[in-house]
Amino acid sequence: MKMTKSVSMLVSALVLVGLSAPAFAELCVQGRKTEVYWKGEWYKATITQGEATRCRVTYEGYGSEWDEWIGPERMKIKVLWKGEWYPARAVRREGANYLVHYDGYTDDDNEIVPVSRMQVR
Image (tube, rainbow, N blue to C red; front, top):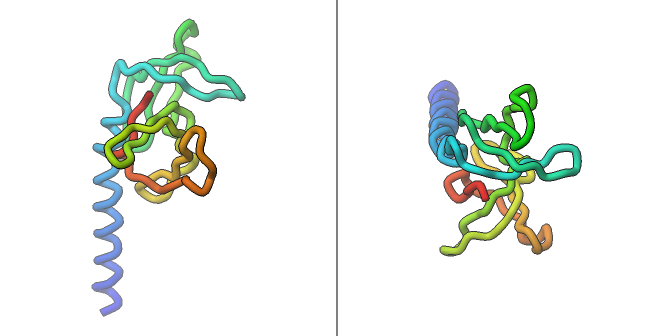
């Protein structure tokens, strides 16, 4: 019985990881413009590649030596809530989802959302 439960939990975890990968790839659309937070400043960037948990960006006006892989915690995003898009930032990853903070709202309004409800802005 314990073995069956362990296998079931492992399969569930793999399914969650698998489901988040395509959704994140949709967030990291090649050619999409965004802004990236780095050392206290926002920099204009373009997404050049996407993977399961991160995007590769190139910064406008900087050489390729500055290109890097980043997660949504460093990008300007918007989150779909009740049919409307709200500007937000991803605070941290929570399993296959992200804890987000909505711009102009208090931490009481933070919520954990799937990547499928997030877009780069």
